Amino acid sequence: MKRTLGVCYYPEHWPEDQWASDAAQMVATGLTWVRIGEFGWSRMEPAPGTFTWDWLDRAIDVLGNAGLKIILGTPTATPPRWMVDKHPDMLAVDAEGRTRKFGSRRHYDFSHLGYREECKRIARLMGERYGKNPHIAAWQIDNEYDCHDTTLSYSQAARAGFQDWLAQKYQSPDALNRAWGNVFWSMEYDDFDQIDLPNLTVTEPNHPHQLAFRRYSSDQVVAFNKVQADELRTHTHAPLIHNYMGRITTFDHWKVGAALDIASWDSYPIGFLSDRLEGTPAFKQAFLRQGHPDNQAFHHDLYRAVGKGRMWVMEQQPGPVNWAPYNPAPLPGMARLWAWEAFAHGAETVCYFRWRQAPFAQEQMHAGLLRPDSAPAPALAEARQVADEIEALSDVGTAQAQAALVFDYESAWAWDAQPQGADFEMFRLAFAAYCALRRTGLNIDILPPETSDLSGYKLVMAPGAMKLSDPLKQALATFEGIALVGPRTDTKTEELSMPNPLGPNLPGTDITVSLTESMPPDDAITLEDGGRFVHWFEHLEGHADVIAQTASGQPAIMGTKNLRYLAGWPDGATFDQIIRGACAELDLEAKALPEGLRIRDTGTHRFVFNYANHAQDWRGTTIPAAGVHWEAL
Ligand code: GAL
Image (cartoon, rainbow, N blue to C red):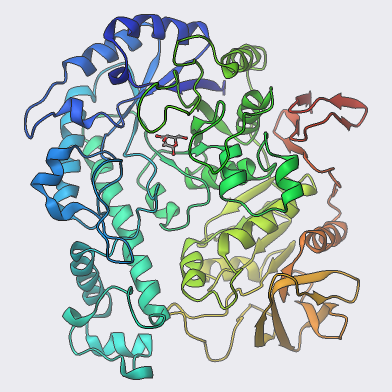
């Protein structure tokens, strides 16, 4: 499939007489797609029931007639001011009980059914008006669920919805009391109406109470999305998309994705490195203008799976952003590298955010492809270069992965509720495993927790999955490669209590976690071969083989030829060593890629990306800083 480029555009921000020249310049840059509309509600419906579609009709005509394909967004991330007057209780409430006010965006509560109805209505009206429009080739529903921490709300609407959800799930307060262990500290309820949201308690709320609220909150995002998806489906055959974010675990993306055709995500590598990823100061300095060399790949692989094979980058950073603590400019070449890396990981389309930098409002310091004065910004030429390169490289093929990583959102909620060690976080653990796999140069697939088919993979990892699903257990029982689960895998019940017999309950191997320790950042458990477990260590017992041990002779990895339990959280070098050892057993080539050099094999090509700020050698080829190299396979 030929890959395409696009851009995010806001016709409502610019004089109408500029639209045609903007469109012509987009086409001249080699762009195929333009995304519009997702924040335009106050201009579509300036007063309740009063519609001004004419500008949007004309914008669609101008952009479409110029030859661009349009992604039309539903504007539900930005309810206009009148909406708040109409539904004063639609605003979300934070965990401290403070209302989150109007004046930016995403000021809605996923539990508010009145607002959900308004979203269904605007989706219906847009579907009726534009669903058959030949220029509208895709739809985006809402914008970045959970952006600005908006999945969880502690409002009255959430409280009522949660109580109803609990009543349906548990049927009787007694069943809930038993499931949650509410006898502990006399927390028993007589009625679902008594159950509050798990905030503002004296000390931590009961873990299953927190987990139930996280499940409930995720379900609201799933339902909110589905209402719009179902409505749009009745009016259009164009694919439905949402633009997810990086490192967001507050809702189950697998479930949201089930109602959509394509998973897209918004990639801001430099903002992320400074704001949202762990790393030593030296590492962050080395990648200041390039981003973490594995973060983009992780999310491409994750969302390719969430999208059931179809993935886009809906927003690609073009220059400095405005929202991170520090906002350096990318190294020349990065706007090209990020796009090619996305394509190599299966992205069909990469859209840069945004066309022209806005001279006003919150994001006026955020770069675009054009400066606010319409002169080209540095990324414009790189987009043009990618467009030319796509013409020359019409098919980059799809990839076969040797390794797989199971990623489960429920486990993220479980460990948020019960971290047990301040550094234990699901994303962090999964990402550490992913980075180690990637440093060996393997292709990686990310899999949902209900996966039942592991054929085709040689190495499978499932760190931190609180409870392995039955289908996955069955697949593991007959797996012929090496599966490495743990730490903290299959050690809890659905309700976040301890199973009896104690976990993990792995097919065909007798292993029990008898005691769990977490450690402060400067402490570690030393392994016999010099490796280290950091953050977390589980004492294992049972009759399985001890495959590796600690310096003091405790099991570090235990299991069988095919299914092994990792007792701790390895540091980077130890993860590398463990994965390399497994690759050697499997006869899989494990490369030792230098820092910043990453590869991805597709069906047709090997791509090599140099995230480093200096040139590096790849088997005799010098790849400049921020350079991309590909060779036919
Ligand atoms: C994204 C968002 C865009 C824009 C962008 C700025 O999170 O979807 O609307 O705000 O960030 O980097």
